[in-house]
Image (cartoon, rainbow, N blue to C red; front, side, top):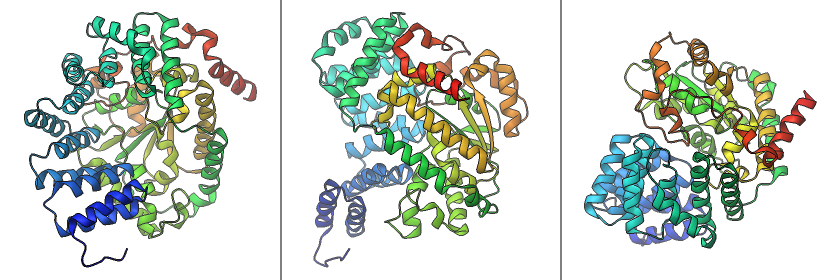
Length: 495
């Protein structure tokens, strides 16, 4: 970009906004940086830069920008709220709580601060505090239905009678986004009450609304993506890069489909005195999508950029991952767990960057796992999760990719079956610790007493002793789950 000398910091800021609106993130980033260089003590360009970085999944870089925004303007409410959210996303719990509370002191009627605080309390397993924060949002901003839906999700621990009545009366008249939110919330309430027909109907309404409100999932495009990964990350690809990367044994990656027991497995490991559970990190995705910048080749996006990485690139990438994933780990942690389930897409990158890493592959009966996915309000990028047939198709593709990586990547991969874990937690916990090279500690069986923040939909389940009621739950819904049932039957015939 040619830099006109007469442009002011404000000019660059306005140009950055225009570039962002046009979808040109690269030029928006550059313009925000010029604005900051000319005047670094204004919060707005730091906030704008952070938002662009977040849209690129560069969450830690975004958090650093927001720290600078608050440093520039210590009472800027937007900067503080967004910093609190960034802290929470990356697991800086105390910092997030302090930032939300500061935002509330500065603007007691700002509903966004209370909502973020409610989410943080949910992460920490504090349902009463979470409900109190969400109810404050409902009072301050009745048009917001995310808070109402969040209260419904706490029905196991608090009385939600008033909210249930409100949700039932409003559902039919809501627009798509809010209909999805309330539908998922009602589904959880009805399921808690064992009203399974009503629960399925509510989930169906929610998913239909979210599907209509999202980009469509194209099964053929997904299949092509799987084919591309298998072609790029061939046996020869890994053989040619055997000596690359870091020798560190610190990273542990838990992969699989969402709702397959990844949080339970992480919680077991994180209860060990030598192991830090880092949560669902976006670091690998950041590094993978950032490889074009590393190569100075913006036209070749990931994964097509993978063959162009040199040994030096991969070594630097591994160092960056260790720095970003371990920066919150306690001193002396010999293992750090990254439990981003969809990192199965990045096993090719892991294999060349961390050949000594341990991979725990969580599996679960797709009839239970798939329906559990159907019950969750995932973000719009997971557009495959709103339709049972698409979930079944995604499962088949993921299994094909996992089989390929198992065969060619050279990583040490252990499969952990959810049903086996809940049936015999002692045996599976010992097996998991032995696999990752940690000595046995009895305390890992008390994983539900661990007070660490958990941000996944399983946040409430892992705060209870292990239970088996989620096994074969699909049977309560019978042929309503026909696409998932047929997927299992098809695999049995093929196998």
